[in-house]
Each structure stands twice: as C-alpha cells, then as structure tokens.
Image (tube, rainbow, N blue to C red; front, top):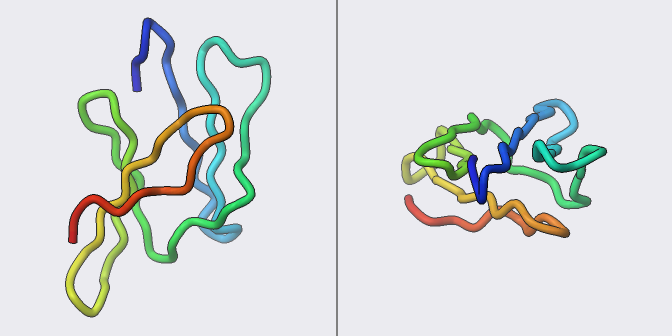
Length: 79
C-alpha cells in the first residue's frame, strides 16, 4: 500500500489469527488486539490491503484493512 510515498507491509499470522503492520516510516510493527477471521488469504490491490475469507456458507467474504494508528478492525466490503 502506498500513501504519500510510504510503503505499508502486512504480515498475517494464520495460527495466531493476528496481523502486523509497518510502514517504511515506522520504527516498529503494530499488532492490533483484534483477531482476523479464519480461512483467510491476504490480498493487495491498487495500494489497499484486503483479506478474503473462504469458504463461507454464502461464498467468500472480502474485508478491507484500514491501516492507521491504531489499526482498525477489518471492514467487510463484499460477499
């Protein structure tokens, strides 16, 4: 993800159900207290970070990650 020239990296820890974020301007990783959904795959598209949850009873769910301080929980944007 690029915002004002800063590169954002997201690490997904599947077994812990957690993510960690850092930008090229950060000195340490940010690990939010909230858990991520099970069966997810990270996706980066057009400078934004997403999590795709699969399979679900109704198909896949897509969550957008808002990287900020503090990082906000993922927001479902598509089913």
